Length: 562
Image (tube, rainbow, N blue to C red):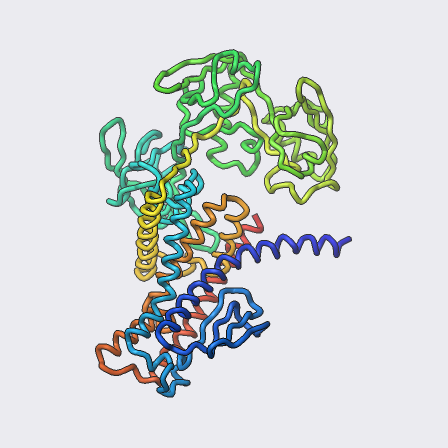
């Protein structure tokens, strides 16, 4: 039994590795394919074109080139005649014997293919249409508000200990710029704050039509690798709308409809969608959860009525409803709860025979840890009882759920949600234009990070290597849509193009640097000097790879532990 559990436990890990390796391997493969096609076009002899690395599985010779499949399916490589300085004889068909222009063409073809694939991937992403998740990903990776007509970011709730609050920032303020840089979206704002722990930042905020300049110093919090990140302990304002209304509920009888925007509760402005589930009562609740607690408790101070300020289109309305709470289950498919018969929308009434509400549920769950529990639910007016045991726990039970149940606390028969950004659709031409624009923004974002790396503002351990990229790819496959995943792969492809063009001796950019020096000198760099430079660079690159991979591993370990 233990062996079976071990084998079954390994399968998800194998799946994760495959999902992570395939996209990165594909990008390396098309990079090498670019070199291969350019070499063939230039009359340079290609000895080997391999899909994958390591020992040969199968292969065949065709017109002087061995096309092979190798054991490690991680990209591929091209081996050209005379490519290694120690193997050059000056014979025709060798890489070094080709003209300077042809050699430069071969070298630049790899990054060019990666860049073109990035543009193609972005074109497809915009052609399909970008939803809120993809827009957030694009904005976070490029630092630009693609798909949004946005000027600055609105501040929502703030912690009582927030440096922003102490500096005079108020909820509903719009952050226009930080240290002179215009703020296009919340992702860029977070990035700038994160990079400047305990440093004075100049904020320009818009409040009621006028601009104010404030100075704020972000707190420093430890990150996962022992450094510090800046944080202001603020949230960003998003509209709250009615997601669902139960038939014959108090909300429906009062006249509320799906899509109404909730602006205030009992006269208190709402800057973020309040969550009233049991999580806010946990020992690990954060300051945002504490804010939601205070709203929940304020509602319950008046047991009879809750007053809602509502915006419907351009009209402002007020509704008074009886205070009624229902703990509704949202059930993960094939989870323990789902197999037991519990369904999404069922209303929890009892926990091990005791009445339950949002505030008491968390402590009851804690008290019943690792023991069978009996849950009473109402569905269609009928009380149903289910018993769940830890022995029945399913692998489909999502982390952070109770046997696959996510709890929603319904207020007076309605559920609330954050207003989502509508999916943006484009024509093929519009999608292409946005794809090219986003590719350019990606290039500038990468160059900006590299500049900060050389200036010391960004540390090498902040970068992601193969492990980090693979981890992010697998996470995106599991948690976001294919459109967002395709964008991320396109982003990595453009990264490969830019990084390969850096003037590092063993990179494509290093070859171009040697070619430039050859053009200036009128003769090639001596082979011995090339070999020494490349050997030293290889050692440094391996050291950097180990360094970055170590911190990738620390981040992965930290995420798995939590």
